[in-house]
Image (cartoon, rainbow, N blue to C red; front, side, top):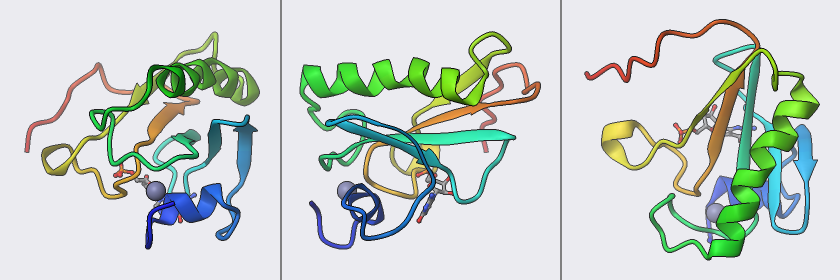
Length: 116
Ligand code: 5GP
Ligand code: ZN
């Protein structure tokens, strides 16, 4: 647990979140400021700053396996969804505890990464 990390606090149950899926390694919960009708975040319960932060293979596998579970719970497996992992400043990562966004529930732009 990293001090002052909001997602560590959510993983520890110290800050409430609307849970979508949980196992011993990962937690999925609804984004507080959804950008799509379906907008769920998946985090490892252990703290890693970002996707390139030497995450152990087993934890990485759980993180990615949780995508399909979230897609099923949210009903977007067939319609489609997007998985986004923002990493550091150029990609606008605001919470520095690695998280995968699962976005769906409606048509999205055609993969434009939108340089700014
Ligand atoms: P990032 O910009 O780092 O990729 O995404 C961070 C996401 O976390 C944002 O979409 C934001 O809405 C969400 N978020 C930030 N703080 C909280 C919180 O306390 N609870 C929940 N459920 N989501 C949060
Ligand atoms: Zn953390």
